Amino acid sequence: MAGADGILYIDFERRDTVIAMPTLTIGSKTARLPIVQGGMAVRISLSPLAAAVAEAGGIGIIAGSGLEPEEMASEIRAARDATDGVVGVNIMVAVRKFKELVLSAIAARADLVIAGAGFSRDIFTWGREAGVPIVPIVGSARVAQLSERFGAAAVVVEGVEAGGHLGTDRPMLELLPEILEAVDIPVIGAGGVVTGDDIARTLDAGAAGVQMGSRFAATLESSAPEAFKQMYVNAADGDIVLVKSPVGLPGRAIQNPFSRRLARGDIEPIGKCIACLKKCGKEYCIVDRLIKAQRGDVDEGLVFAGSSAARIHDVPSVASLMERLQAEWRAAVREEGPDR
Image (cartoon, rainbow, N blue to C red):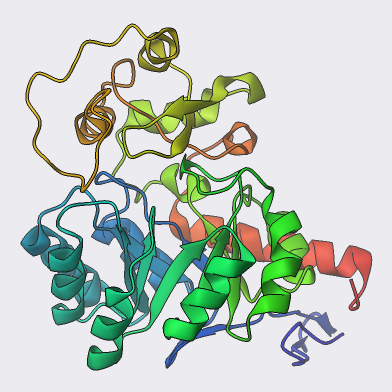
């Protein structure tokens, strides 16, 4: 039986076929597996997680939002020292130091830059001049086309199922066909992907790869504290809620005392603004709340998570998770046949 890349792998000891996942190429960089680890701020996806994912064959991503430019560059260098795999960064367009962070990532030799929570034309110029692929996160065919026109190497289609800030109210698999029809660059599906079967379903729909955030937040190499990871492990479907963000976009998070007060409008005004965003609704300081969660205060912090976080029941190492995802994907392909 051939893999999705058309190659037949045979284990002569077992005398059966071993199907390999397709590779993922973005610009001049190729990952052995079509799995992009989502960039989770603040300080959830740092060099230990990104390096582990890249070493296991995927694309590891460091979240730059909420970091200082030199801090982010240091994380990139640390990941580079730990792996020869593909390591990129994710930076929100909405942050005030967006340009400084992007240029710092490029100078530190990030393999690619993913940008979401807004749209920047300038980033394509910076990427083109440095030879670094730029990958916008999009929620519509129009923005995907615009991205390709400006020089995007690929796009991430993030559906409403995703964690963190959301740019659409439509499911990823509903958006995917429209965006595939609109562009000729690789399209990566994001939102609700936590198992190998989810990967198979997304690749079957035409995506070149998947982006997975929540599943990697609950791994040993994630820089989230144990209490944060256990929020994922213990979450039920009803615990995943939409919250208002001062960024100006809705966010998806795990319900806790802070999110309940936020829903009631029972939040104290910001005492001091650190001006981390270009535009801020000032309902509360989102960076402060994300930092609280990363430091272990999961009652007063903001614990972003995707809609499928309730399907996460353990905290494995990245290496074991990647092996599991491949086994699940192979089982799904075998069950449905090579033409699924």
